Image 1 (cartoon, helix red, strand yellow):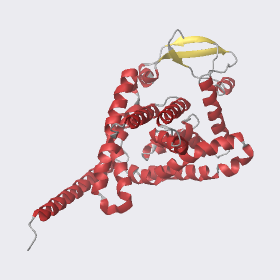
Image 2 (cartoon, helix red, strand yellow):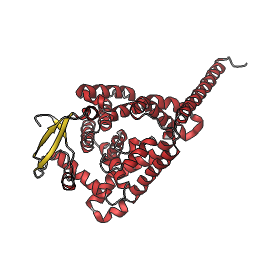
Image 3 (cartoon, one colour):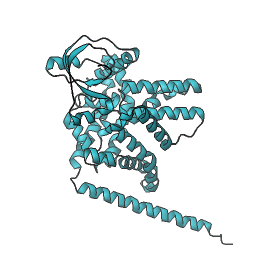
Image 4 (spheres, rainbow, N blue to C red):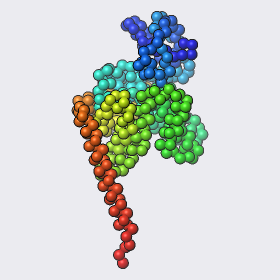
Length: 369
């Protein structure tokens, strides 16, 4: 309205039923009253450039938006129809994992995912971009360098628009675009460097992103995975194939300590086993869910069969969240547990460093003749 963005809340069954059919990018003529937001709400939605509330009185029929909006809405519509064949809350979790639609997720489910350290799985996250590019990889690899770069950027832009420009997806999309550009130019693709460039560029373009909790968590987790994760994983080699997954999980948790404690007042101790058990399955749902959901949405007769793996996957992830929320200890045991983990890792790191030093000294000794 006048170049400013307002949010509106539908009240009453009839209005909610009508508004529920609206999709991003569509055009609607409306009349109502503009209102100020309370300070707490204003801070919460500042990153979305929302400046007030619009009390809706009347709205016209919907007009379709541009080509990109229509294409995105068709895809989301197919995913929604496929998710409707799943029992709730599995369907709501599936929509969140695949396209970031978390509107129908019950409060109880959101709370238990937060309590178990799995809140990043209730909606799309940066790893979705990696899965989409991996799915498109066989086709992209057949193209020559410049067309491949252009197609990669196009896929990233389409998925960012499909997921409604969620901060974590925007961050991951920017990093993927920079990485593709660096690969094209034969330049270094250090994750930390790419992350720093992506965050700097995004904040310069949209300074209000710094108010997004999702952006904080996404950047922090990525930084932790890129720096702390490999360091911890290399020192837990005795765990065998679990070394790097544990290192990555601990790195992600280290990266989100500050925003998690400041915003949510907790850092779940069960997040380590919960993520190790849930994330691989959630990733499989993300990777499988897009093509399967599209086919199930467009060919309803196939939906029961196509969506069966997704049903098992979402049920598994939700079950892990239920068990994690039940097993999460109360303070101060949580912080004592984290302190014990830090002490153990520090001890292992010290032992590994001493062993490497002794090995180096042994190698430097002259060989017996």
